Image (cartoon, rainbow, N blue to C red):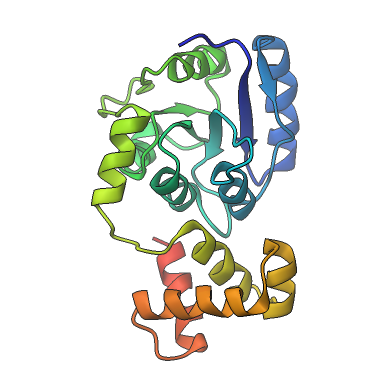
Length: 216
């Protein structure tokens, strides 16, 4: 696959890191189109599962607050079989490589490995994988999609994840509906489905279950 015109989304909740990565990659990858970076996992899920021009390549931090990297990657991969995902971490690769592969990414790289960042992104954009020297086996996007879909350890959909995360942060159904561009009834349906899937009898139990799930 040709890299030309690949769209790239960068996700990290450290805004200084986001600005530095964007500045570097704009120069290192002149044939990529860099989308405005985002600092939240829910926004990454929203953009990458949209039917309207989702990014072709995703660079995402593994240890974000809120919806963390593995959870966001898994939610995205469950609904998007084409996007190529490169996980990144400031910790040792051994801490996250297996989790990144299991979630459906095509590779992992250290944030400190700036020398190889553009090479890694080009590699996965070409449909190959990048283990970063971790020795972990990664799969291409299509195969990772099949495996994630078959292994439904967390059966929440991308939209249910967005709704539950917003609810856990104290947003009302009306605000969540506005944010997600859906009706309040749809938000309540997302929350009800999430409660059923996580075995929760109340919204309070749902928040507790979500926080435990998010901290894994």
